[in-house]
Length: 479
Image (cartoon, rainbow, N blue to C red; front, side):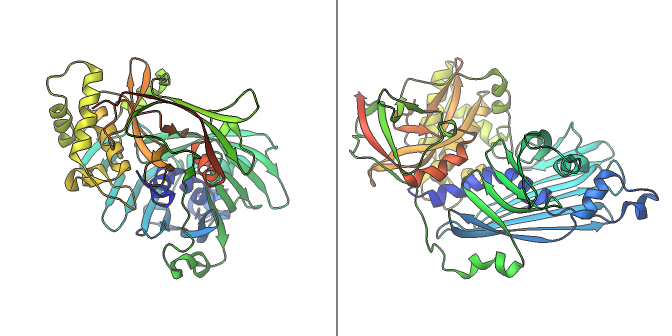
C-alpha cells in the first residue's frame, strides 16, 4: 500500500496525461505561418486557428494549493511540417522529478496528416518511450522494442477540433466529440466537451472527466481545474511557472488518509463493511456511485467481498488488449504467465495462480513514481502499483480482460484507509477484484474502489471526509 496520496498521485498524473496534454497544450500552443504564403490562397480554418494560437506558454501546476510542477508548451515550423511540443515536469512530496514530454508533427500542406509523434516518461530510475512515424505504407509505432503497423489516420484538424468548433460561435450547452491520440493504446480515443459558460474572459468548457478549462477570447487556456484535483494557471514567464523548483522538496506535503472511528481486524477475512461517510463539505454522489443514502438520509458506503460488478461487453475487448502500459504480448510476460498457470485449465484457478505468482515474484519497496513493466521484470521490486500492473499484464497475456484500479484500502499501521492499487479480472461476466500485493483472491471487503470516471475528482474529497463504522462482518481467512 502507498501510505501517502503524494506517491500514488504520480501514477494518477501519468494516467491522466492525455487530459493534461489536451487541455493545456492543444488549445494553447499551435504554431503556424500564414497559409497564403504556403498555399497561395486564403487560409483554411485549420491554418487560421494555428496562426492565431502561435506562442510558447508556461503554466504552473498545483495540487490542492501546493506548487508541484510546471507545464511548458512550444511550437515551431520545421521542414517536416507543424511541430507541437509539450513538457510536464512535476515532483510529488519528496519523490524524484518526473518528466512527461510529447511531440506531434503534422504535414505542411492540407490535409495536414500526422507525420511523427513521440511520448516519453522519465524519472530518476525509469524511462518509457513511444514513437510513431509515417512511411510510404502508412503509420507505424515502436514501443517496448516492438514495431507495429497502425490502421488509422490523424490530422491537424482533429488536433484542433475544439478550437475550430468554438470559432463558429457555439451556445452554452453545446457539445462536441473530438478525437485525440492515445499513446498507451496506440489508437485514437474519443473525447467529449461541453460549453458550461461564456463569460467576459471567454468560453468555459468541461470534459467527461470533470475537468474544467477557462479559455480567453483567442481560445487559449488561462485556468484549468483537472478533475477537481490538479490546477494549471497560465503564467507570464518561465521563472514564475518554475517557482516550485526553488522550494524545499516536500514542503506542505499532504496525505490522503481517511480516518475511521474504530480499527478493523485484518487478521480475519473482511467479508462485509458498512461505513457512514462524514464530510466537511457537500459531496456529489454522481462522483462516487458507491455512496448511497440510508433511511436517516446519511451517506453510507457498503462493500462486500462477493459483490462483483457486472462486465460491459463493450469494454472486454479493449481491456484484453496489449498496450504500452500493459505489454501483454511481450515474450517474457507470456512465458511467465504460462509458467505461473501451468497445468491449470479452470479460469478461476489460473487467475488465482497468477495472483500468488506476482505476490511472490516482486519484493515490496515503496516507489515514488510508477515504473514500467519492463523495469518491474528487471528489478522485481515495487509497491502496490507495480504488483497490480504486472498482474494486469500477465492476465491479459493469458487472454483475460483485466485492469488496474485505484481505491482505498485499510492500512493497519495508520488505522485508516489509504490510497491503494489492485486489479480486476473478468470472470463469468463479472469483475473479480484481486490484490497481488496482499495475495488476496478475491480482494476483501476493505477495498473501496474509486470510479474510473469521474474517479479522479474523488481524490479532492478524501482530505475532507472520515468514516464511521456501522457494521462489519468477518469470515475465515483463507491461507
